Image (cartoon, rainbow, N blue to C red; front, side, top):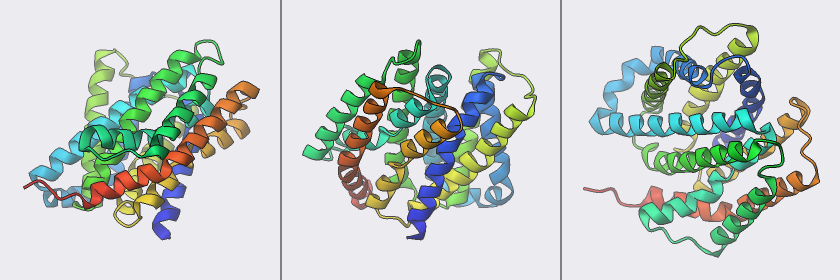
Length: 291
């Protein structure tokens, strides 16, 4: 129960940061923001995690670095989409990683996707069709967010395999460092290296760097070692609900009837596909390791 509660709190933190990040990106470049965010996350974990790095071994370092690269790529796509669409749309489309999890498990590990998974995919796709393009320029943003959701789904699948094997703090530190390294390289190439200014930007960086990145992903790694696959999938399915709540109350999102219908259809697909996602994650935990 504690692990489930931790995961619910994590999704709530992720939900509220959609609003902060959207406001900050008006004032500060995308890749620079993400690079500083993961630099702060790395510094937050370093005092404790640095002493535990040797426990990872070569395999643990490689796994954490790969998970971090996926994380950085997923955030780049999601945040680029958030610049172009609403907070509520971003939250609901991001939540489709629950729907995509059993499909990725099918493609990568030959885990059978049952009828519920396919029904969930069809509903989520129909909801996305209703939601996409409601605002001018939103269609491109929604597609970016969808790409980010696919990357997050892969990261969750891999975390379900890696989390039980390695020290949570050391693994998360390497994950944050790998994300930072990739993003700072992209930011430098794009000419976006500059010093953040103003409380709107710094407030978003501190909240996302410390709470939504370092502590949240540390909590995710810790909780996925203790929560059942069903609890994990259920908790993650709450993120779009939190995003919609904070988008409505803090960002003034008013999507209209068609868009909210699309959100509800996506959420229905997520709820229906959730048992299939849980089964896929559970299978990955039980799957024998390669020699």
